Amino acid sequence: MARPSEPRAAPRGPIPIRLVVALAGWLLAAASVSAASAQVIDTLAAVVNSRTVAASDIALARALGTFGFTASADAMARKDIDRYVDVVLILQESERIGISVEPADTDRAWNGLVARTGGEAALQRWLDGNAIDRDWARHVIELDVQRQKFLAERFAAFVIPSEDDITRRLAPGQTDEAARERAREALVRAAAEKAQAEWLDGARRRAAIRILIGDGAVIAPPFPPP
Image (cartoon, rainbow, N blue to C red; front, side, top):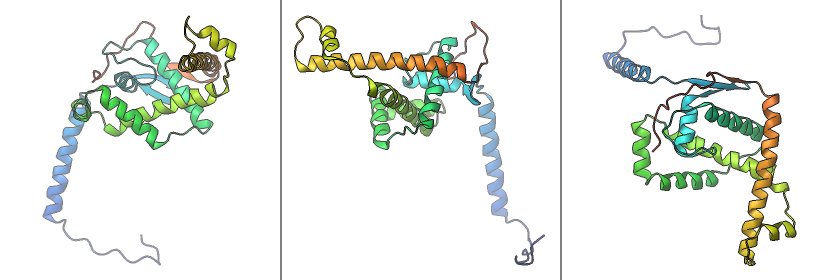
């Protein structure tokens, strides 16, 4: 019922035939999409602090070579789920402390993916052929950049190798500044990864994690890598 301040609803006439035709077309299209979607069965693999992880999440991360995964068409096992759980914990913490990603950083990472997969046309064919939304794939690339920024800003930024440590890291005969810089970067990364691993040990204990497949079980990936 309309409120006193609202105008009375206009009398409704018959629905125009063009609207009926459009509605019928939409229903047929929706039915076709539903039938096609029913053929694709995803598997829920884990829940991390109420955030669900599906097999398709892990498969896309592996296909794109993100989150430390290597592109593979092999069945997904418990180790893949555990790795993705760690990624979820990292991303949740990075959001909590305010780490963000600049669009230009995502663009660079996306362009790297395009180059690795044989070009824009090849990548788009793979996305279309496997019914993978382009925005979903791009978001995964963005999250991978965020994961790397977390390592850099939360841990690596606080590692300062001594000159003696850098010298000991050098191979015999290496004395130039470029070699010292590579040695310094390697020391920083190793220390940062060690610190992150220790942080993850505690984060796993504090988190509510449920793995939803049995020990030794595997999940067939819903699509192959490009």
